[in-house]
Image (cartoon, rainbow, N blue to C red; front, side, top):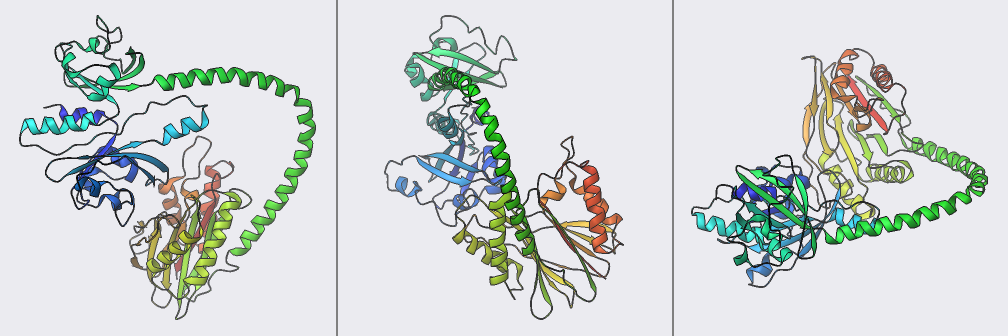
Amino acid sequence: MEFSEEILNYINEVVFVVDENYRIQYCSNAIKTLTGKKPEKLVGKKCHLSIFNRMEPCDNCQLETIKKNRIPIDIEHDTITHRGFRKLLSARFQQLENGMFAEIIEDRTSTKKLIDKLTHHTKELKASNVILNLRRKETEKEHKFIMNTVNSLSEGVMVVNPDFSVNIANTGLLEMCGLRSSEVKKGKCWEIYGYTEQCAECPYKDRTVAKSFRESNGKKLTVGFNRFDQYIVESIRDTTKELKLIEEIKSQQKVLEEKQRQMSLLNKDLLRMNEKLKDAHRIIDEELTQVGQIQSSLLPEKLPEIEGYDFGSYYIPAEHAGGDYYDCIEMSNGYWGLGVADVSGHGIPASVIMAITRAIMRSYTYDIIASSEALAMVNEILCDNIHTNDFVTMFYLVLDSATGKCNFASAGHNPLLVYDKSEMLVRKISAQGLFLGAFDSVDYEEGELEVDAGDIVFMYTDGLNEAMNLQREQYGYDRLISKIMMFSELPVSEMINNVMDDVKSFTEGHPFEDDITLLAFKKL
């Protein structure tokens, strides 16, 4: 059917199709919310590796169950997206023709938060976009394939013709409305909901209508409208429980108002306690200052003094203690390990992880002149010792001071900025690799470069390029690169000071929201 693929694209559940060897044959645009990659980039790759960052198939994968002609069960994926967000996903499995299998994934994260907090209004649980890009030679097989997929969705789906007749109504909708498929073949769309005339909020009447509400079979339904050519595609959700939950929240708000009134009576006591809290804050502030001093002491006491090279650095935490870190590790035979890292979060937890990372780097990577091997080793040790949701990004470069040759690797960190004096330009250089402390057995790409006289290698954390002014505008790469080129003839320490002066001017004295760390060197 000419609108079949578009219909599926209006459905918000994520669907991907794999063969018996777990290789992706088709996946939806919504897959980008998990991986950050377009569907065509994932075709032919292993589903467990490209989507869930697992080297082997998921422990509870149901493909083998289906192959044995057993009924698959729904499973959950507790995973981390490409942006570092934790997602709780519900997956259902469907066997297709020609040895293909479909996995349909629904994001349950927002639902879980709604149940946990009971204070947020219910957000519509839109199922992930269904992507079925398999071309069928015969229209009948294509229609059957699509209907099997549509009927497996928990949402109701209805396609309405211009004459208000129902083109498609999936089993989810029929169950919501208590109907049989034979009862909708000759009826009008409004009869599905039990109405006797056209709905007041009909998208055929008013093209601006995108969402409406219906009541049918004792249930309260939320209906979303989308247009495809001359057809209307309706996505229906049973929101009866959600609306009851909202009513419960409203009743609880009245209870909270009474409690707030009672709490206001305690205001005088709280004012007296506030003075005691100020003293406690002062003590805490002094202790945090000591933590910051301890953390600063973990940074290199002095920068490398290598003939023919000039080094400079800068470090400022957003709070008393931060999660940024840089180091200069002297190896044998004139090699130096130079790294800049950024721990997720701020404050004492981040500073503790930073200290652990520094200890691992100095204890285990000495004389490992392959930067990719060093990062892989640090990642393995961090994964064994950090059992929180925190992670570390790092750019690590190994310099052969005798030749100026470098090899480098990146664990999800900002790109390296290299000023090439011969061409009078600044290049962004990076390498592929996931951040440290989150995933076991990660391979890191290793790159190489050679610095010549006058070239500058500039390493930094994202607190620099993402520094914001009062208008919430970022400092950005363009401005940073222009300043590196402008001050490239100065000693490295003066160049860094001029860059930071410009950053402070840009932010208009507004406190930095993130730690800022710089480490740079120039070959003389």
